[in-house]
Image (tube, rainbow, N blue to C red; front, side, top):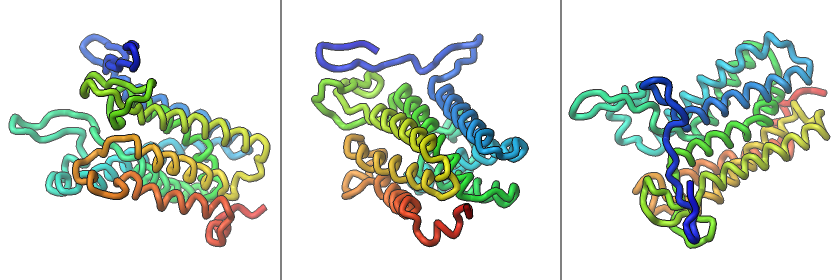
Length: 279
């Protein structure tokens, strides 16, 4: 990174470090930090709440599989359904078929909305096995989720992907790997919002720990994260050309149901309270 007379020139090395011929990308490292931060924070919450340590052990597996599968299928079905429905193996395999054969690409395409859906389904399966209250589990995961989201968006920034629209604001980034236009750093906007939501959520938790199990933190997480996502989308380039003519892009459309569910849980809607832990 370097500073021009007005804008931030952004072209970091894609790799954080190399071990022999094997390189570890910043994006992969950020995903590892995301998973590690979520693991450590939720483990701490379980201990503070006196939940049996054995019930925590399978949680990471459920979350990892749910997020990865959901995020991958979400990207394939929400953003590129035409291509992936005709190439179904590429939804599952981290490879792409080219005229020269199969090429390893990693999972180049993960959608946060799909990851949220996948995580929710995984947690439903988890509580069926552990018999823990669903809202207590969702609240604990929700307290830690902004930390994971922060690291993932920082990975997007290091990859110079999900770039913003051209702008003349003095903090604009020139993503040299993409073009030489000054653009909104939409990834950084989101990352900073998520860091703020993490801090606010923890402050509320320490002042009102009794809210865990009510669905409040789950609602707070959905409402804040997806409201921020909805608004910041106005500063970002559309991910697919077919979104350009839409009033709201796909990211915004998919955010609306999550915002509504979040508000419903925060105001203690009747159906959410049926799932809440009885005090």
